[in-house]
Length: 102
Image (cartoon, rainbow, N blue to C red; front, side, top):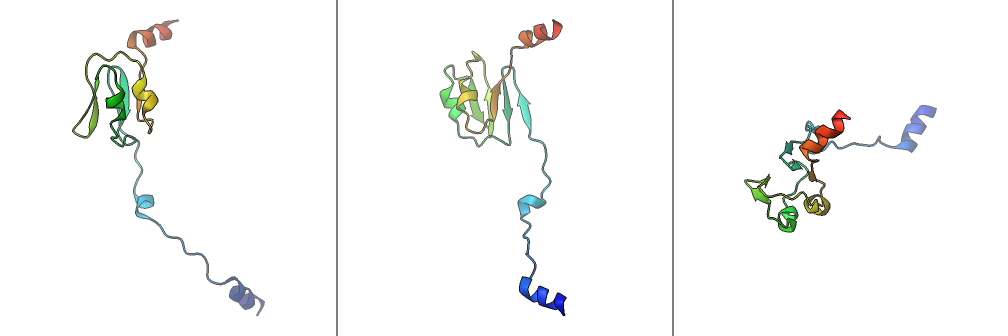
């Protein structure tokens, strides 16, 4: 009788709703490395801030992707102003090789 009284006091157990986003398999983000920048497709909301802020017009938003054109001066404004952290300036390749040699 004590167990029945406890069940009546506690009520129904909690019902958990599983949403569609929780059911889907989470994959690693698609990372695109260009010569001077790295762009993460899933993090980018295509707000175009990086394209507008670039002083040399080196970035383009084309076919739903950010493309690095020529003349990038590696100023880092695109990385600094991206609200989604979807773009980053890569170290120069010769700098990366020289630090690895030591």
